[in-house]
Length: 102
Image 1 (cartoon, helix red, strand yellow):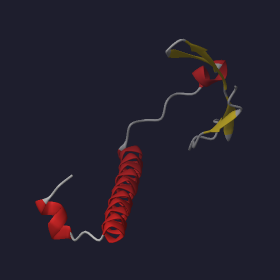
Image 2 (spheres, helix red, strand yellow):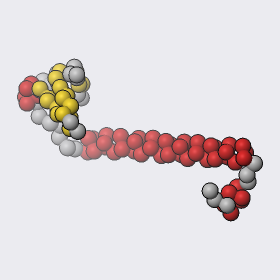
Image 3 (cartoon, helix red, strand yellow):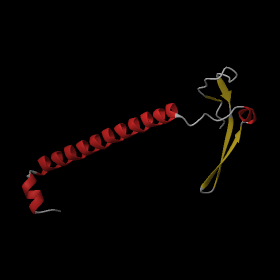
């Protein structure tokens, strides 16, 4: 299962628009072995750790946090709705359920 092309953002003029990386996965029991072939990647340095990279990372983390919060709220609302439907089906009120938990 090779990954064909992984694009990378670059500001320098000698860095190509995209880099082809071959990656192979091999399951072995409870582990997954990964072989990455990217000899051409050694020519290009890793991006510098600067304010722009940190700002981008913070934006992604904030997005993940917001999406996680929305998923949590949706799950809670669905669980509460399911509980209301069960109470309506049994004719049980909320106070009765608090007094007589199952």
